[in-house]
Image: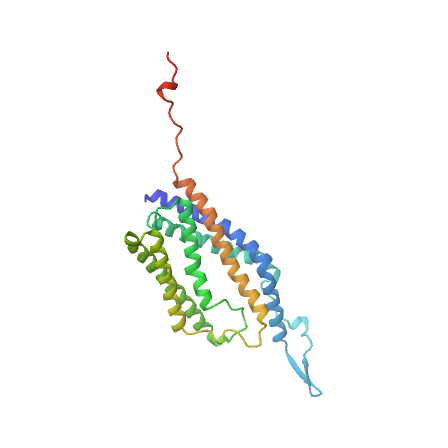
Length: 269
């Protein structure tokens, strides 16, 4: 593929990532911020100082305003401008990386149209980069687990991401090698089953996160937080696949030139 085409795809990928980031931000704001507010309220209640008075334990009165530590960034700023900045930068970065992967994969994953290839790359990226690691190590709300194991949990999550991506690449290679003998459909099914089996083995042998969430943490709130987190990623990658597929097809699909008039249709002089 010419370097100019790769460059044009990179620009369109970053643009599609920006659009997808806007859509994901809207989803995160309207769906994800509710559980986060509840988490903050729960954390504030749990960390409230206690004092003993008359044999009873009660919450201590609020500290004077002069003694309270002033927040560097307000909660309203975090949930609006801060959230938007993070999601948009994340979307543009992933869009650029996905566009480069698309440039390499185009024509190597089968005879698909540019739009279908974009959808396949987006779905594969969401599955390998986020969904599979999420199933093993689901998102954990802040300040609810053992702080001494944050480093270990982070390392395990990124190890699962790396392993999932490598297994996905291996499944793609396996499918391409089996295609001449089994056909594209059967080869794809075999490769998908092999990927699922390898991921299952990894799930069994990799250690879990037993101390990631306190036993007293509300299960319903934890479920809402994780569903919202998964939904943000799903919306981001789905929007990217649709927008980038449209832009890539307009760039790569040759426009049909108007048919030349036949000799019979040309009037005689």
